[in-house]
Image 1 (spheres, chains in turn red, yellow):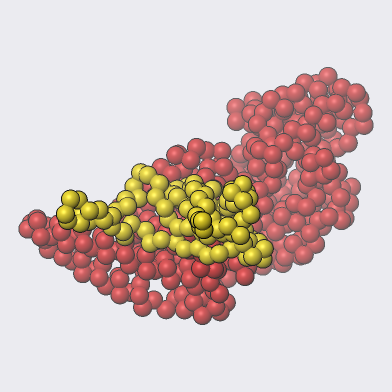
Image 2 (cartoon, each protein chain N blue to C red):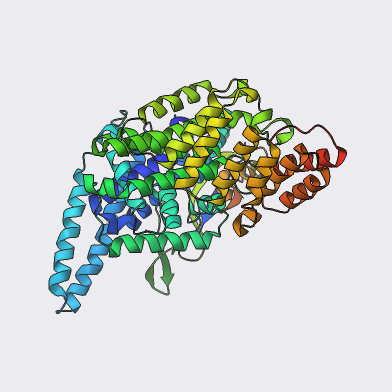
Length: 442
Length: 117
């Protein structure tokens, strides 16, 4: 029974429901009530047994707890009212408002389906919570942290772990973000105008979550599949519950991002080989790609063709599709990929895009053309710390027969931050360069 | 078979750092631990005590003095207890050793004394 329950999602549901009822300025209280419900479950269930409907139990306990917390706040307000005549009127208003909230929490019908053990309808509260957490007034990293905390139900330690940050830094970031939302008096209910204004920011956060999961920067796991899974889940939510808000172009962008994520995720099972070594596209066993995921990705790519706006997600999904539909590495449509990277570089002129474009050029025009393109960007300070820059030059040098330069580059790549599977891959390539073993293409 | 109480101590801050996924994992292990004891016929009951709602009573010369407490802030208090059956004190400790409560609190293992001279 309890194995079917996802506590992270129940937590997120509670936070979203309470935040809608109480308003975003009570977001911390909503989180506290949800957390306290989990504490109660941990303390009570071992003694009195697991309830027959755990989510319903948690939601009810959280609501009761929210009432207690509000009453506590209200008592504090009333105390102040009696001692400070000047602020009495304002306080009185607040006290009345808190009373109305208490009644609203008690009578709220939104969780009724869950309380009855039925499958809940698409969750509008989750959608609104996502758009609140991704509000453009917040810094980008604050949006990501707040989304993971309130919409995905991650803990502070887990967020810190995912982004290689200190727990205190994440905790402070969350507190500051909530204060900003409160100070800006942001509402919870999502309007079409809010949706249009914040969609780009929401897509950006999902893209970042997915990429962080897809290529974890360090640690012993190449892929943090939970981050990828959450990004896709929220993308689906955006496509379903958000459909009624979307303009044609907005919907197309959502589908493009979903296409990209599904097409990339399809390759996850094949990216790490035996001995936990990273496998390049050329070396992957394509029969291990997830064909259902590829099919979903291509469907979303079709849907993304509506509208007249081209986003970076369209281009990146297009590139991912070129790889996904190639039955063998040798059948990859590199000229088309190079074209797509040309367009992408125009919209998103980052060193990493330029690097990937150089790799595509090397497949079309040979390793020397690739090296020329890489040399043009190798001076970039950020790129210099990126293992893939050095690994790419190493592979291309190896293809031209320059084993000394290749070995030097793989050593430089190993000095950069990378995950364990990536490190094992680089060590293997360094040995290949030293021993003059075969030089497969990158 | 002798009975033992596992007195579960925790302080108010013990849960602050736990995430929803942590709670789920601990609760699942807790369920498995309890099921195992029940299957083996070693589980003899358990209760959680209500938080912070107690009084401490003492006789002070002729009158009873009642104070609020126990206070949960800053120190460990008994939050609940299990009663188990075990062949020996060591076996009781081994059972407590697997109890997920140790993830966030401490356990005091005491034999329930039955002396029949």
